[in-house]
Length: 375
Image 1 (cartoon, helix red, strand yellow):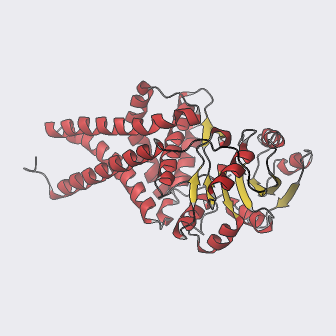
Image 2 (tube, rainbow, N blue to C red; image 1 turned 180 degrees about the vertical axis):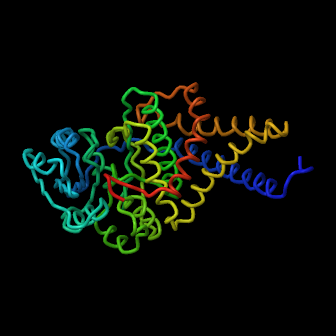
Image 3 (cartoon, one colour; image 1 turned 135 degrees about the vertical axis):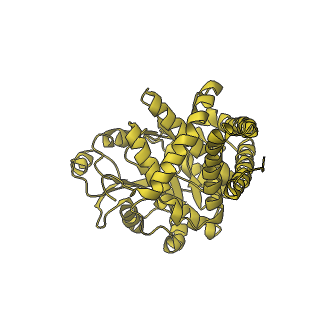
């Protein structure tokens, strides 16, 4: 195989193969941890929990009514909660719509700074709860959401609870791909938390103690980004050796809509990927690089297969190994996330994924990240 091959190609081939093997090991480790996850906790209350539920919104008039209705339906638990809604300079009447809703313990704020990160920070600083819970205005939490988070907080004593989030497709192929792609991100992120090496979480369903936030907020990275406080906060908690737990309980499963368009999907993934160069957590960087280079390596094997038969054989074996490893992880969370994911669909999406990932990765390096019309 080495005869007549440029040295650069050989270096790329063997380096890519190493990253690919690392990727398989990581996915297998995540899948094994999922096999031992706890599931729902028994309902045993030890003390009352005061929750501050915080949602930052910008131009969410279409989604706020459904979110408010979901909050009104929250089941009673041993404690209480306040809802702090932060208006991040909306111009679609969101604030007026929210003020017309009859919600107990609602506190409305107008953000002084710009961007979701600043809006959340301002709300957290004035919150009075022991446990901070964040979500997005376009989310629909279940009736048992806050009760389940309070129960897990008391039952585990964790400093941070990473909750599950499910994207709801609208029936189109692109939306279904979007939802499954996000599901795979959720499963990998949850597996990493269970492994004791968290790398990802979503502010759409996140809880943490205010005491731990006070300690971690001063050492967070990513100050230049308008959003992305969730992952950077996770990394700060990890650096301070705080206890982080994934809530593998359907009672805490928050639903959110897909982006709706192919363009929206790519813009969202570019925004997420654009923050990765600011990661200083070594394991998160290792995971990101292994995912990127493993898929780049597979793509590079395609044209190489036309030149050398052995490259084609390696491509088939590598793709099959990745196909099975990914499915071993994704199939374990179908019950929690209430997702139907046949193997035939997995095969199709696995052929698409390397192209989509590499396209969004390069887009993240070259294009500015934008959120709600702002950089």
